[in-house]
Image (cartoon, rainbow, N blue to C red):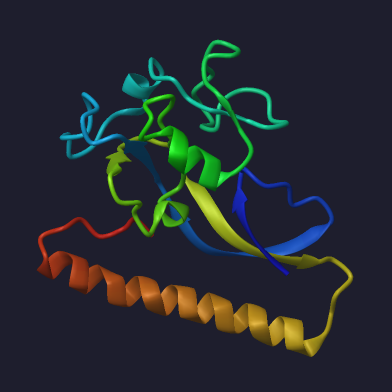
Length: 163
């Protein structure tokens, strides 16, 4: 079993279920020109330096295609987290892997970012009852967490995460 992000991860050969669908956030250094915005449109980020993922052609954001070689090549999220404060790049991941927020970085919702799905994947041939029960429990927990997150976010005056 794996937690995967669609469209970023390959689901070939796997059955899968969606746990949640979410938008993206721009991860910026605190002194970045967009850091004080409540949200930004995707078009504004097309002019930013975006990372190139090791072994992936194009940008990390579907819909933004930077000039080839415009950003540093990164191997994983930990490396990326160190490059943003050094102002070598910004990041636009789905909301959930951007949490918890790294100290010294700012998260700004991207209003029209393509939606991504957090999914649970398992082998197509795996029909064990234990796997099925786990998938159902994970989906129930994800939906329950979403229902409880909405009222608490509203009380604090924040926007609730998009389902």
